[in-house]
Image 1: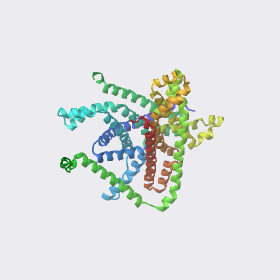
Image 2: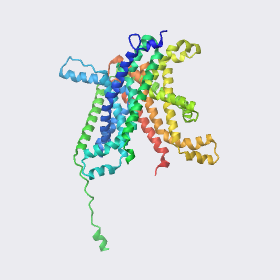
Image 3: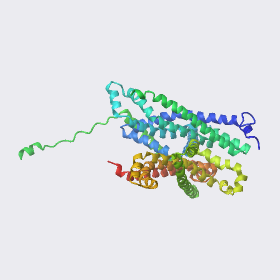
Image 4: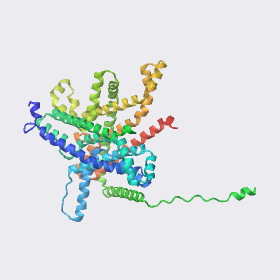
Length: 237
Length: 276
């Protein structure tokens, strides 16, 4: 049996450099999905708390679908479905050309819609926690609808929604492991390759789990910092 | 008499508030139309792609896959629930060592992806084949199905332990003290006073956990367990027909929605006494 430390070392002998690339892919996938998911989630939440019934219905359909489907299935639907759909669209324009969906983009879209449907629920409950008087106060001092939203409601909304969103970020980070199933070289796939080559499956999958734990711990430090920053005005109220 | 007839003139109902076509209303209708178009397109596609041979060949596979999924989730949830009781107890105990051990367990299983845990157990424990053979556990860990049940039970136990702990701690301390002052034993208090109140709080998280397990169970397809997702992948790899995935999506969606509405119904019923 080779030395464990050699296997985990950096360089041609060890696998740390390969797995480090996987960490980079995982983290960048998560960070790329986050803003998209937050934005769509916020818009869907806006739709779901609007007084207009048709908007509410449209928003609810979105959440129902993407919260009800398994993440892995959503990923496959996006990966294969978008490929077939775009292919057929492209054939209408210029027959004979082929298109390949980038697995990173497919992962981003699939994780983004799942994240946004959960995030919309978090935002929605935060919206409900803000009293109507806040809007009325904003209008009464002459702010427009957009200004009221941006200057009065949003700062409070973010503070209320933060714990829920932080939780969703941790879930997103774990869900990125699913993209290894469509061939993206993330942490899990890289350690899977290492495990197959070296026949040290327990070592490498255990190592992968430890990396996810470290990422979660780093995230919770970041989240704490953001929460401190968001709550810094709390004492003045 | 005449005064009455004079005052009772017909009164018109106030006119309906006009509902102008605001930007929000237009956007809402546009999105509804988009969803409808998507739905019609999907139904149209499924009708168009309807293939009796394909259905006849793969419907039994889908059914068996569905049963595998349900069985996997049911067994894992029950085993996880049993396992979660000592973990929740340890998490709430004043013993520092016990508490730390339970915390580490929960942190590990909640902090790492279920897929990684499943790989760790299915592929990883293969590294210890001689040792496992020596204690006679190899037949258990060689089988993908048992590994999946094992991994899922350990995972959901961690989540359920937290649900249980949160629910028990949500019951005010005065309930314990009040029951103690009546001379009830600790286990009587737990069983008759605290748990009935805690389970109302825990119902929704438990329901969510079952739904998460149903959705999470799709990943066992990657370790070659032929659950609903596994059968779907097999059907797709043989036919390259995209409708295989759409059928799976419909089945999963209806399963999750039924469960969600069922839990909401139960919650409405058991919280009747709390409604004012």
